[in-house]
Length: 102
Image (cartoon, rainbow, N blue to C red; front, side, top):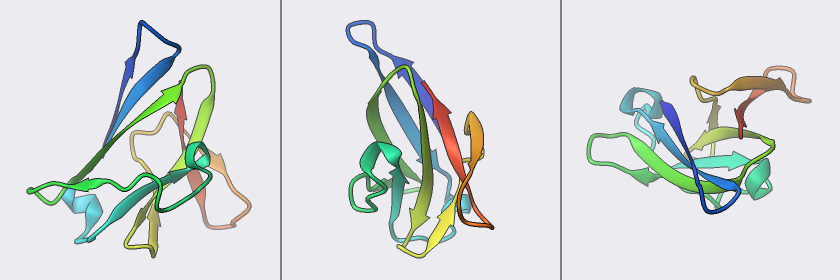
């Protein structure tokens, strides 16, 4: 998995590229990026399945804040980004959210 940040010079935002490897996808048919930037909507940011079994997606977000998110595979399996800037505790005992700092 990976996250790449590209800060834009013309406006106060950044393009974020998310990629989930074939291994982490573990045979998933669909993966969504679900977070506070899309109101935790599993249909808002669906990742594109690539020929090699990995998934990718790009999002543009305003800078100056932290965003919490997780990946959701096949609407049933949640997992975190290994290269996240941080992890945040949640109200669920067995879960943390990935954090991206912009």
